[in-house]
Amino acid sequence: MAMPNSASNRRPESDLFVSSARALVRVAGAEDGTEVEIFDGQVVPFGRQSHPDTEHIRLGHDPTDRTVPRRVGAFIAANNRLIVDTIDGGKRSRPLRITRPIGPELLLDVGAAYAPPTDQFEVHVQAQTTVVRLLVDVRPRLVEQSSGVSSRRVEIELSQTERAVYRALRVPMDQGAVDPATRAEAAARLDRGVDHVSEHIREIHRRLWTLQVPMHVSTSRIDTVVRTLLAHGIK
Image (cartoon, rainbow, N blue to C red):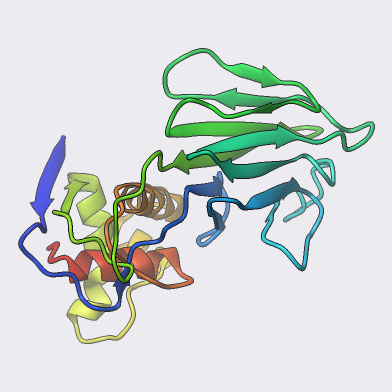
């Protein structure tokens, strides 16, 4: 059951920012911070190949090579949607599977492109012995903004479990420290595994981003989530 934490009457701090990205793509199971924002007009390739000079999503190479093709496909942000484009990468090329919260799965053939008519979906890349999942959130419309901060009413809700994770991460800051706890420290306080902490922080971050809540900017997802919730008065 969701427990509401209203932040509608609190003015966000000046260092909070609403990204204008169209989509957010995350690699399922990856460590904290593994995500890419995609902006309108941008083409972001994905596969095992590295693209040093352009934004890309590299997968299937760490910690071991899972024989993902070097070039699998690309995400294209156009016409207020996110298009999944597949690429013929040679003999290892395979169709992509697209799943949605509601509705049948879709098998996207090599050389085809498709824009799922939903705001949340997954792209499954078949490797030799496993499947790599890309988790995608799309904003169909962007709230009108000035100077990067939304002026609309902000409502943030945390479940009891999410609030417990947030509070465990916040403990050092409550005691006067500058930074939040690490995943391992929070997991120890909760008597849970680090994956438990990561899972809930990823979900909170995804929800804040999708709802265009003004967020703290950091390379650490934990730092972003904790400081954003603190700034909005979430206890």
